[in-house]
Image 1 (cartoon, rainbow, N blue to C red):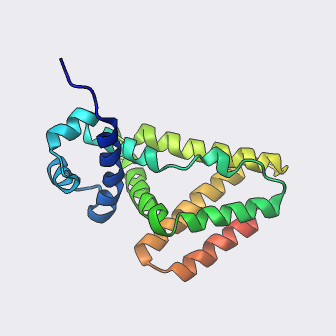
Image 2: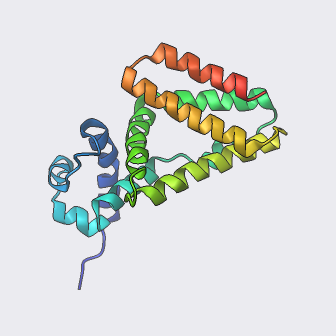
Length: 184
């Protein structure tokens, strides 16, 4: 009989995966060095997660904020602009920046035909657009899905620029301008 999963150990492993991929990259991800870094074996990673792709998807899921809560209870456009700016700031520093760096790698990998992350990426983008569209709808913005798509895609592109260029000042200004000019 198989031994039951150690949920505390599983959670500990998930916490280390995003940091590892942020430091070493997704393209060359191999279970053996990842396992060594996490203080376990590749066999144990497979035992807990079945595949390295599922391991990464579950690790990213633990990092995802409750996006519906982020954009709930908005009173007006200034409140939404403030919430978007707070969200931007939370995702450009600390643990948020680490998660974003990995998320962008996963989204890039999801572009490949039959990529293992396509379903996760589709869900992540769809959830973000839907939650933001609901917030936009609550403050009576025309075409909320279109505006949400513009904001989500635009901010994601600016985040990618920031990671690649390292130019925090310029990308902060670009994010602020996108938010302010889009949410009226």
